[in-house]
Image (cartoon, rainbow, N blue to C red; front, side, top):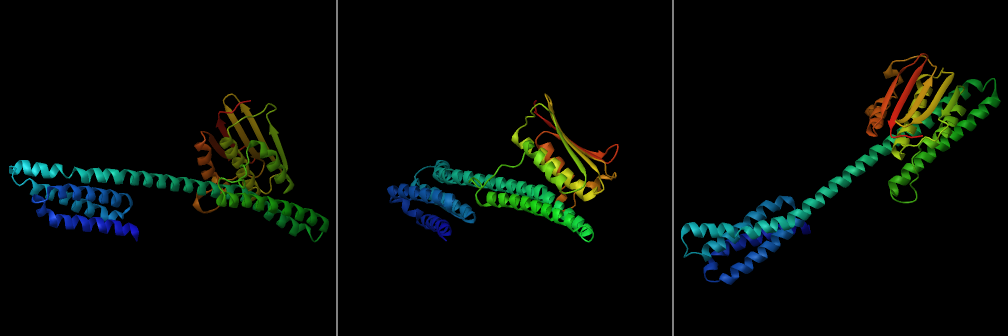
Length: 325
């Protein structure tokens, strides 16, 4: 409401001044006062008024400034008179710059903030998919196993229920972390995203959720990687293990290894399940998530991701630069 009023006031003042410009010949001091007032109004309107009013306000204010000088310089030759009138529109141009520059800066800042928010939303969506989907797929696998063994081995069903509970609590913890980020992006509710040091716990939870022999091997020397690289590496292992559970449930052996050297960090996940084509091993879901989206994340930190049939089963290999041991 107030912003629209600023534009209308400036246009009205410019129009009235344009109509009153013939008075300039008898009141030269009034011309300077009117031009100064119009320039101030125009700067305020450009800075805070609606964009639809800016062009009309600038034309009316600039036209009024030129018209006042046109009548004030009635004794000059026509060419000099016209040049003087055009030059006197300079205050209108200065007002446009004075009001337009901070407005443009504020707009660019708002665009950057919105882009940052969009990137955060996409990152949180990937987190929910990568981490929660892993735990939920474990819950589904345990529930299916419990349903089959319950009639003949009730005690085994009880153990499966315990693993379902643990996977459910892990999924809830991840969701709590994401909600905390949404509510307090800079507050204490934000907990760090899992990285390379969290891989043993991830593998242990996967091992507990099924019958496969899951082995985790790590370079005996410390493997160092930037935090963003470690977070993407954790996602690679999460996605690969989730795909094993979804698409290679008959796999009896899964090997997860992390090695580091002067040239980078390598993360390798191999299972001995039946081979499959890439589309069959890609996580289903709208928006192209799964190995294709994971490859983009690995590429974003300068790494490479390959996935395909191995000697037996399927292998996923991610190589990241900048590691060291």
